[in-house]
Length: 344
Image (cartoon, rainbow, N blue to C red; front, side, top):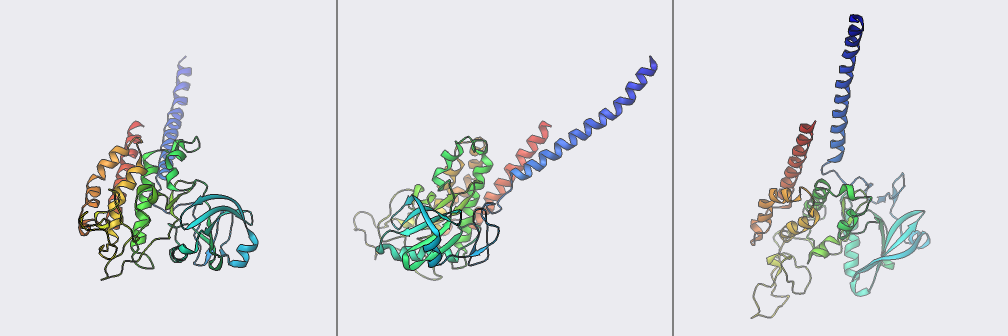
């Protein structure tokens, strides 16, 4: 009898060790999972960046020189219309088995805007901007990479799909807000000078300027209206018509009241701080109403209040906003990791 008890005790020691090893492995797997879940503000992984003048899309393994007119004429085949605006029409197209987006000028009266967009696409190629595939200026067409989810306007409907429902969480949504602010930092310090997002007179128009990638990141897509803020200049103006509404910054609105009819000549210029005013509204949409979004909004309350200062000179820079967003993201990540640890 005693012999059997002794045998049970000898078997019990390895069992305890095995339990401890299993627990350590479970912890290790959990932390690896959390690290993968919170990859921070690294560039969109689906976006394959090449050297200037080259592209790589879809299943391509090597970077290829931008397509020119003959190659676009011969090898880019239109499939169907997927988007249309004042400046261009966008067609889902195919090139050598790869899906691409073909953008076609709608009218000669918008050719200057179209060519400006092409110029910006060439100059601002980065991991934050949609990849340029080719250009044929003489025909008024250019080709970019294709993203099936469309613009950021589709975010809520995309996250409601079975495929993405599990990713409708605060960390995915805050990461999208980080992508937006990171792009503003890039735009305000770009290789071609300080640029302002002028196609942003309302929330829907602003969101339509960004594509939603399949791994749920934002890429700037529509660069037709990015005027340059010149050092010591008079500022820029987003078009020649009167802008109204709470979404546009105060300095973008007619300052002389109804007593004086609007005149583009009398309208003062402004700068990149008009982009800062809009950050809280865009972030509010991107965060939605998932668990944790209210906590994030609370953490961002102060920096958002500073973004909404009526005097543009008192607003923070995009870089200062990004610093706060990253701090909030890291803090939320750490808090969530600790709560998971406590449950173990």
